[in-house]
Amino acid sequence: MVVVRKESPQDYEVVRRVNELAFGQPNEADLVDALRGVAQPRLFLVAVTAGQVVGHIFFSPVVIESGDSDFTAVALAPMSVLPEYQRRGIGSELVNEGLIKRRQLGITVVVVIGHPDYYPRFGFTPAKERGLQCEYEVPDEAFMVLELTPGSLPGKGGFVKFPPEFTNV
Image (cartoon, rainbow, N blue to C red; front, side):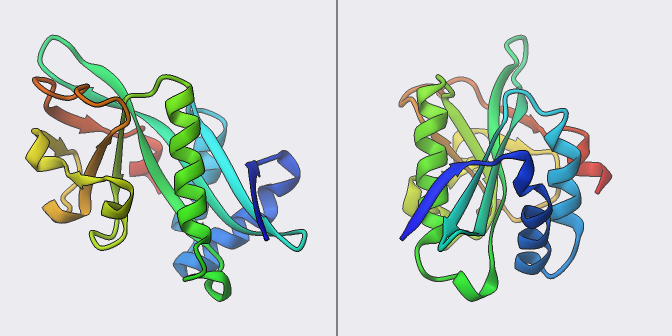
């Protein structure tokens, strides 16, 4: 059984290891460490099974520059699961729980740069189709958006700016 809960300070070291192993490099772990102290509002969740943290997800604020009416959304990044626990639904549990918690806090828009075969199952669609551009050069199909509150994006397209920590790692 998998339990998804908020990350605690006691999880920091193991979360770093989960990210390093899941991505095969330290960049995402460095990003999590950098964002932990500065991103507001933020949400860190861990997936635990048999007392072991096996997955992690992070949501941080982004700004959508939209003419005179810039607004805040959140980015889902990064999400990681230990390689030996992948393809068991743990990532899906982390995403679903994170989206529920974002909705409860009144967040209306979530963006993600991720695998175009994975995130659509949660309702994500290509951001370009909704008038959004990413500040990073990524394939159009990898930059996606989800309206947690239907109707929150019409007329609000724009340029999505990530926190500077995303650029620094």
